[in-house]
Image 1: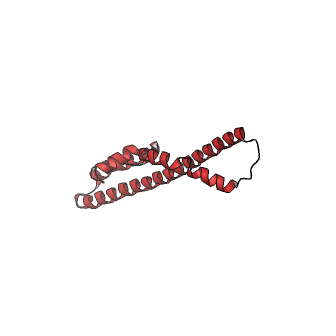
Image 2: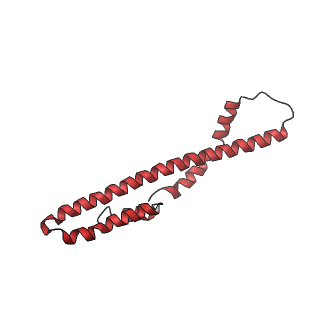
Image 3: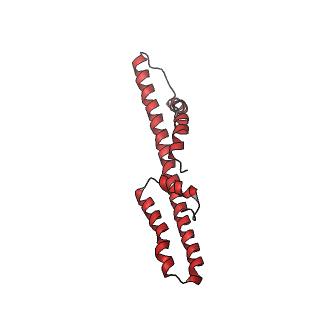
Length: 132
């Protein structure tokens, strides 16, 4: 792997969360050991370059897929935190309300989205989801 992107890709490989992704990348990395012995000496440089390009392309593909999954997870986390804040506020307002006040539901929901704390939680969770 050092030939293909250096130590950074070793870290990325170990950080891939899908076992099938890791297995496929490892298989692709090991493929050169089957290809080179059967490749004529004058064609080995081309074979190594094609192999390196293939490994790098596969790694880039899985990094992009990982990024897509992280983006979806962050969106779900934000929505879950917002929902929890909405539920918390509804419980608190139902207990303390004796009179019905006219409330702009849309602005109340927007306010709760801002104060739900998702920005702080996501900021502290994202470092654990990023590929190094």
